[in-house]
Amino acid sequence: MYTATHLAGRAAPLLTVQAPEDIEFLVKESEVLTGQSGRTFVIAGADWLTYRVHWHPIGLKVERLNAAGQILSTRHLLPREFLRHSLMEALAAGQLFTPPVRRLG
Image (cartoon, rainbow, N blue to C red):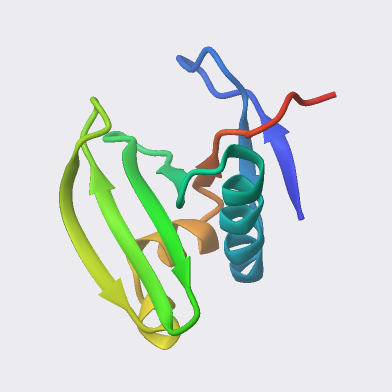
């Protein structure tokens, strides 16, 4: 499903997201363990783009975040629309990560 990865310049390890179906599981896992809606995902690259994804029965809410965690933009997407989102492109390229919500090891 996912593996822990240490990336240069990052203090905490990140989990590599390996399949589209992992996103639903990871979002729901985070919501159950933290009691907060959504989960943060990072696209590894020059800009380190950060998103918060919220899972809903009819689709997803995707929030683009700045470095301080403030929402820059919000998109509501149907599952088929989400498959064309830049998060899915990053996943296909092996560049989609998420911070763990529980201790690794």
